[in-house]
Length: 59
Image (cartoon, rainbow, N blue to C red; front, side, top):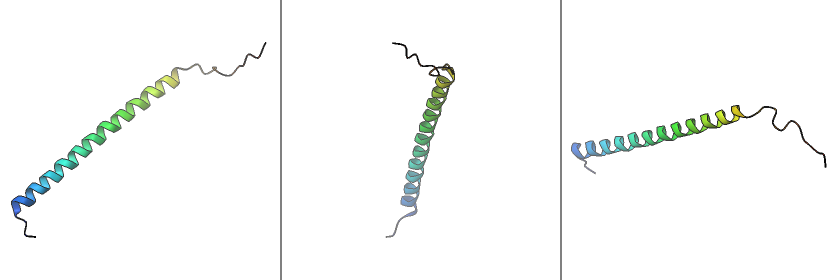
């Protein structure tokens, strides 16, 4: 397998582009996870802390 320098350069460039794309997609996914977690935390913090402490059992 005698590979020319040009062919190796193209292969390395394509591998780097694929790696850069994978990293970009991972960053987007991580940002989405962080925003979902922040929204969930805001919802939990806005709940009434006394909610569920009392049960009305009168019939």
